[in-house]
Image (cartoon, rainbow, N blue to C red):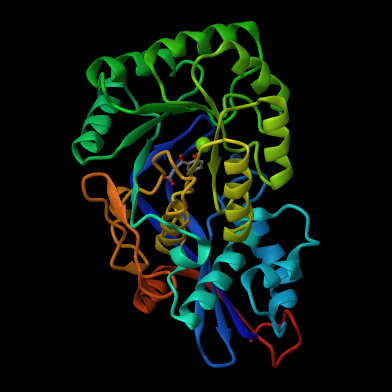
Length: 379
Ligand code: OSB
Ligand code: MG
């Protein structure tokens, strides 16, 4: 297989409901869609779901575009490959930039599976026909507003509700939501905002009283030692997100006991190839996993659904219906959740159709590269 054309579409969508985390608030997202074309004219699609600002990871939309154009596109165009893992070796010497790599890895899996007439889920080793959907709820202006949001999503059937927390918005909202929804599978995500102090330890132990299924990334991404210390005095499992960007990090997490659950994100780990390897490694180590999200548009969302069908994904994933975030998605049909379950498509490739009209309407800028030109030239 050989890629003869790559197109990068910087696309923008407004969020139907503004989203606030411990670091910032957003009302729209810019994601880069990656389109591969092979010699036969077949297409593969990927999504670079990087945030605009470097507050979740160090990457941004601008850095992803730069790395893609300067290093990844020239490496993949014209290269002969049989499997996505093989194509991924072409950009392996680029350190970091996992979000940028993930978009290309996803496009390779999409092209590979659609060419073989195989579903993405089956090719990745998926065993589930439907996956449990959790929902991630941002910080709201008031506890009443949060209770309304939780109620809407519990009524919609979501199997797990995650609440974003930060200092000053932690024990109170958790207490209120737990009181209103005593049986709900509930967890919290701090996005690494807490300082490793005795005060934080006391606060986390307070959260232990609310039967949360996990506390996601309380401390900074590199601080495995602080997570390990905290886990030893907590009943509630700690789940790592930002801290785990490669397979070595899983080794560190396990060796130090820095958490008992792992959030695997396709984007954060550099693509589906690494995400599957992370799943296998966590499984061997007895660490249950779930699939996290980056508010993906439909292409990235389809990849998340397929990944979540692997057997080790035993907690509900952040695979909400497209409509939770966007009015009109890039794929047809949109991802839907019925009674909190998302069906895993069995059609070839991503299992969804990418809509050219949507791309025409929502693209801010486009760059095309072909193998007939010097690598990296604009078409
Ligand atoms: O920490 O899981 C996170 C969104 C953007 C950045 C970080 C995170 C999130 C989410 C959204 O929680 C999950 C989703 O895509 O549904
Ligand atoms: Mg998280």
